[in-house]
Image (cartoon, rainbow, N blue to C red; front, side):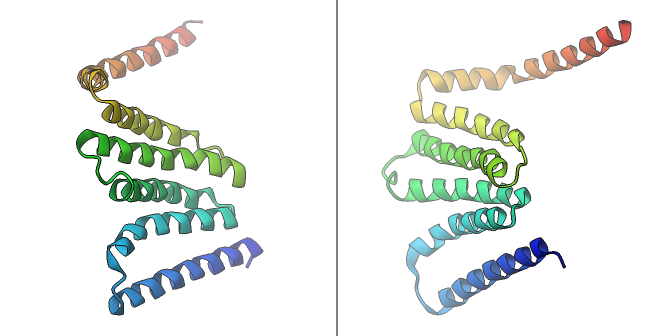
Length: 170
């Protein structure tokens, strides 16, 4: 067994033990409402640390996603608990987007992989979250984009066909 594989098994084993101990204790001790709120962010941190320690970008992907969701849960249940409606959804989506943005940053730093694709869902969520947070005209723009997005697919398809046809002609 390679040393990287051994390290992977140790980190995975530790993560399972920690989760098992927490789940076991939760059956006998009332950990309160906060325990439920911490499960998703804790899983995110575990995956992030596991990915960083083993230098495996595949683990950073669920780590980033779960960390973003967890941050959104904690923010909307904690300091922004009094915010309601679209603004609360905006805060959650911006947090979720931040988790997606973590993926390319951490994978580049710790694994040398470049997962730039994660910026696409993160960017979409950030735009929608920002619009929900600001409201008004931003919501109207989102609604308009929601109606015309198929046009972008059509234009993209035409671009690919014409670009390909131009290369065959020469």
